Length: 67
Image (tube, rainbow, N blue to C red):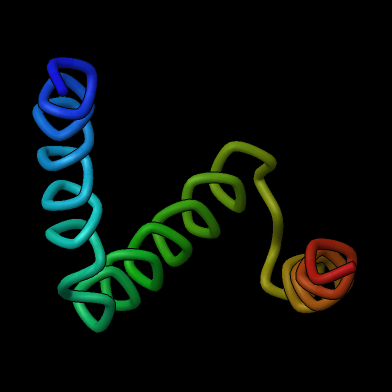
């Protein structure tokens, strides 16, 4: 019986924590989009890409990332 109680004390918080992380997926999508835009801007700046180079580089990179 004590084993069941110990398991309950361990597993119950994990179940609630997992459930709370599942909330707000729309929020995560917006954050992911913002991070992606910041990443593109940062890499473009660091590589000193011109507009023409960026137009060729990013579609190729995004296609590679999806695969």
